[in-house]
Image: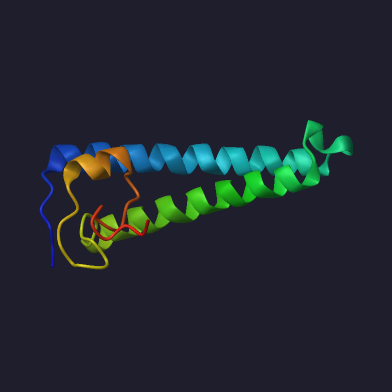
Length: 104
């Protein structure tokens, strides 16, 4: 199923995702550098690992959403195959499930 999100909101969502991708990538770079510094740049090793994992997940989530935009499946719930409301996509641009199908 292909959902039609008009061009203006789609471009806004694409810009949001691209910006998030850059933010997460920059954060991972920063954390990687901190991990190589003596004293880990003020982070304990466990926190540094957790923050890096979060940044990696953010990169993966945004990359998958951008891929869905390219292949025309962005905005379709992967569980129920129904359109994801635009409000949800604005709040969580990388969302791949609607709120009804979101695990709790």
